[in-house]
Every structure is written in structure tokens, then in C-alpha cells.
Length: 187
Length: 296
Image (cartoon, rainbow over all chains, first blue to last red; front, side):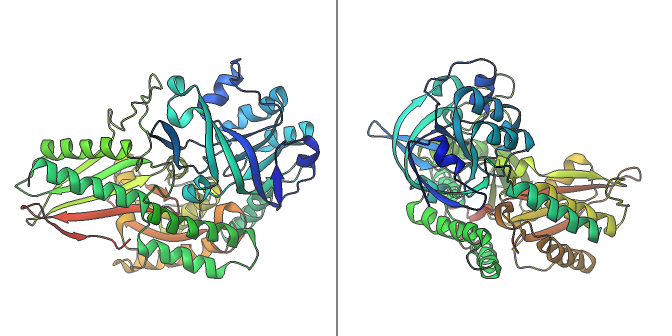
């Protein structure tokens, strides 16, 4: 199903674990350095109300004075677990895209503030880069380096799967519980 | 061979390693794809992965944006010295970074500063060996941070797993490693494993064993049996591609061993993501490329 900007609470609340979505609109990359910076009281260089944050450190090169995305898959999200929930609440972030899922703290905030976790396919840097149709800006690249910067990506039909929703559902918690059960049986 | 020719070959090695998945790995992805239930998210994930492999090769762009730790193994014949080789490789790395085959991926661990060139202390990571024959053999792996973060080392006995100092104990460690890595390591992955050694040599050997072809059979019959058993059991855990649930949790498993001291028994697990980017070339003294080590 399509998930188009603006990313309102109503649209986000309608999503359920297992939904395959295609995102169209402006999204922002942000990973370890950005999350720590915001958590430590840093001011965001862009308005994050009803935004989507993409856990991604892309390969971007300059060709003829223009930024071109050469690869843009997701990075592991769990590293942001201490920060993500509070940042969702503080800045009105509606969704994060990443890989590997997040923990109980983020899941709790997803319910509280109306947000979701969207799982992109890890390592699929080309399929995903193809859906970035323009780079509309970059922030804090000098401070954090290119992979850790905030890139403004205009995306069209960017594919992801809802694996944590705003109703307490988490595919990650379920698969972990099931696989741990199976492991204990054969150990 | 002059420095420029060497650099040209090394740049092509880096380009191909970053942008083309070796065919032996592709075949395991395709096998996994056939096993997943139609319409499942597991099948969807593997299909995206397959599409991505084709697209990366066509566009000559990185399979994954995390072009990883650059690990280079060179077998140096008498006509090539370490300093000359290192210089040419570093130049090729800088060039590959500028061309976007490699991401700016080398960060100062104290200041957090990114060098922007992929050069710095320990970056790239070199392993030199003397060559037996006349050829210069260069192999490399690009190992991303996601899968490196879920690589792990067990010290047996392990009370939590009830794992003792034997192959049954090793089996328990490996299955636990797959469960712990779920989702985070971009599964279905490949395990490179070393039984024994010290903490350092164990990890080095575990990574090197990832160079084995995906479809080979371990020469050591005991380890061949263990590889087969753990692969089957791991794929029965239901973790699936990306941890979405499904039939394919592990693409392959390669085990080697090193002697240990009586007091230690380490099991080192190098977890590699599905984007198992490894390749190699053999070069002659006159500067000709005699062969690629993997079809890609």
C-alpha cells in the first residue's frame, strides 16, 4: 500500500505489522551521530514534525555539482534504542526506517505517540537508492562526515515492511520468542 | 609490474568485489528464494535481494552502502615487496572511494573524525603471506558493520548454553549465534567459524574460512558433519530472511580449527551478511591478470 506525505498520525495509526508499504515524499537520514546529538540537546536543522527518519549512511558523490546517491540501504536500528522513543515524542517523528527492528522502549513510544517502525531490506542498497529521486539538501556533513549526515531524500515508492506498529505489535518480538523456543528444544 | 598497472588491477578488484556478488553466493540466495512460502515477507525480502544483486552489477555500484572494513590478503612472491604493494593498494582504495565504489568508511576512534579516504591506522586491514609460486595473489573481503557487530566469540564451557568443550558444545554456540544475530546481521548470513586458537587468531581464521566456496565440503569429516547438521538445524529455527520469519536463516557455514592452550577453548564466529563480498585475483610478474578467484 502507498504511504504518502504528509505522514499524519491518522495514516500511521492505520498501519499494522506485516503491511508492505511504499513511501512517497521527503524523508531524512539520521543515524548514530545525529541521534546522540539530538538526545544531548542539539537543535535539529530541519523540522521533524510528522517526519520519517531513515537509519541510513548512504554513499553520495558529487557529479557536475549535484549530489548523486550511489547506494542507500538501511543500517542496524537497535543502536538507537536508547534515544529513538524520546526523540519521536520530542520532535513528532512519525516513523523510522531501518533494519533489524527495535526494542520494547521504542515499541512503547510507538503506541504512545503514534509512530511505526518500517523495515527496509538490509543490504539492498541499489534497489533502495533507485527510489531516491532527488537529494534536496544535506546538513551537518562537515561535523559528522558524509555517512552520518542528515540527507534530505525525496523518495518515490520506497519499499518497506511494517514490523512494529502503534498498537503494540512487533514482528521482531514474535520471531525472537518463537526461534528462542525452538532453540531451547534442540539444545 | 609497475605501480600504475598494479593499482589499475587493484582498483578493478575493489570495484568488482563491491558491486558483484560471487555466483556461488547468488546460487544459495536463489535456493533460499525457492524455499520460501509464496507471498510471504521472507520471499519478498529474498526477491528484493536478488533484484539488488542484478542492479548493482548492471550499474556498477555497491551492493550495499556499507562497503565495510576493507580486509586485504596478499600472497607476495619474491618480486613484490610489502611496502610497494601497500602503497598501490592504498592508492586504489582512495580512487575507489572517490568513484563511489567504497563509502567514506574510516573513522578516527578517538575524535570521531572521518578521514574521507578510507585510509587511517589499520585501515585498510592487511594480511601478508609469502607466496609459494610466482604469482601475486590478492584476495579481499568487504565486511559491513551490521554483520561484524553480531560476530561473536564463546569461551567454553558456557553455562547459559550448557555447552561443554566438545563438538556438541560448538554446535550449541553456533545455533545460539544465529538466534542472537537475527535481523541485525542482514540474514540469511554465512558463518565463518574457528574452533580453538587464541581470541585474536580465532577471529582471523574464522574470517579467512569465508573464502571457501559456498558449495564445497569440509575435508575434515567431523567438521563436514557438523557443518551439515548446524546448517539444517539453523534453517529450522524459523528466523527467516531479515528476521521476518521463514525457511532460510543461514546460507552457509564453514568451520576450521586451530590448536589451543589447555586452559582455553574459544569458538569464534565471523558472521557475514548475505552480501558476502569477497573476490581475488592472480597477477603475473609482467603485470597480466591470470585469473579471478570467483565468478561474479
